[in-house]
Amino acid sequence: MRISLQNFTGEFPRIHESRLKDDAAALAQNVSFMSGTLKPMFKVVKYKNLVPLANNEKTKDVYQFRIDESPFWLQFGIDVDVILSPIKDDQYHRIYWTGDNRAGGAPLFVKGVDAVDGAEPFPLTYRKLGILPPSNIPTIVRSTEATDDDLSDEVRFYVYTFVNDIGEESAPSHPSSQVIVPRIGAEVVIGNLSIQAANSGRNIIAYRIYRTTTGTTGNAQFQYVGQASASSTEFLDNFMSEELDETLKTELWDAPREDMKGLGLTAYGVAYGFSGKIVCISEPFYMYAFPRDYELTTQHNIVAMGHYDANIIVATDGNPVVVTGVMPSAGMTMTELPLNESCVSKRSLVSLGYGVIYASPNGLVLASNNGAQIISEGFFDRDEWNALNPKSIHAVEYKGRYLFFYRVSDEEKGAFIFDPKDLSTGIVRLSIWCEVAHRDVKNDEIYLLQNDNKLQYFDLNSKTERENYTWRSKKFRSDGNGCRMLAMRVIADSYNDLNVRVIADGKLFYEKFAVNDRPFRLPNHSAKSYWQIEINAQDEVTEIILAETMQEVMN
Image 1: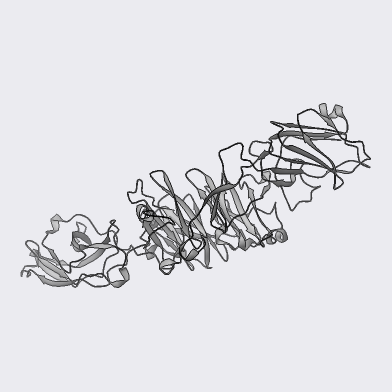
Image 2 (image 1 turned 90 degrees about the vertical axis):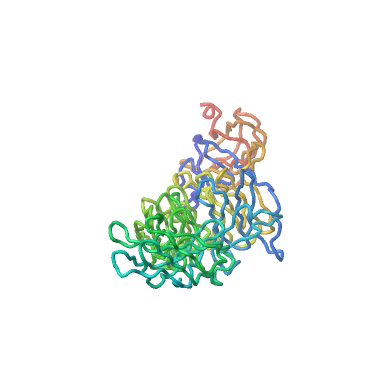
């Protein structure tokens, strides 16, 4: 009998150790197979201690962003969803988030420079996202009298909008009453302009005035007339229709719902979120405008949302749903995916470039262009999966792989990582756990937050800071009445701390620290039926051979 291992993969826990493929592991912890070898993963080390929040509240979520390449950390006392402005070179470095318990749970945003203008913890300030439309209807204070010639007169209606300090504009007010004035030389004074208390704190600095004109097609449209200071109560319009150009584009631009959460952003500049069963979709590149006309309603309550390409995946407490479309104004289509797998943990949902993964009662679901399917069935059966307490799972993408953390109790918690695009490589255990994992997209780095406000760094750019890994082979069964394995060889890139263990019939038979690639003999022994090899090391191992004779090892 000769065992030769030149390729290595991870665990398949639901398969018995004796039924595994030859390259599969009965145990794989802290080990990487990306190079086709046994290789240690990077070590988790302390990064920094975060400043406690107000009233010594613990930080429960973090987000790293940059201003001119300088990194800053935002801290939150609750699970939040954060996106950055999709506008290239946004001068305000705007940051948006939902789920915060401040401001009544409303969606919030802040200019990046304001968020960090002082001492930690950040953000130092925040504002409610969106502007409510004016509740006052503009009135006609006075106007030039119309002529008796209908052809020399025009009919007008007026609306006005709010504009804040960074140029964001609300939906318009209801239109004024009709006013008829001469086409030439008319003056109209608009009144009853005011800001209602509901818009307090939204930094409204001006009103924009629009009036109806009739286009060449005969359709009436609102066109921009002028802007007045928010301290004004009236506005004088003495412009001719020929002088007007810009049309009102915010007519349907509602502020986001006050309880919207699950904020995300597609590559096409479309933000999304949810409220109950309602899918909320923004005007592209206008993160404060969520038209009610764009909303869609699902059959089941929404738990979490993610996206890939132009597809938004809606994970509910029933079937998952996919919303497809690039331009919401042209219509978004919604399709219920034929898989009855609910989402049991909002924080388990991760958006990948080709699909979205989330935890269900029966395993991990991947929703992609191929539909929706449970992809963890090769790793866990239902009992093994539920033993991990799926409701506790939170996850993050790590170098294209799905890294998830689970917690059963203070004593029983941990993490797994696997490649959703290559399930044949199995799954790997990690000897780490955290309250929150944050991926810095710019540098593809992972940070781990512990419950004592300690932030750790997972991906070090150092070959010396490595975690000890353990890889144990399947149970190889000998023919007949067993065999006597008497020789072994381990080929590695180095031999600094390479511990080799041979397990026979379920018991430790031999252990050795390998110091070079020369074959070595095992003690004489009686025949054994089942054989396993275990490596515990930081060294990169390329091949392992276990055989009955030295000649078989050399061959």
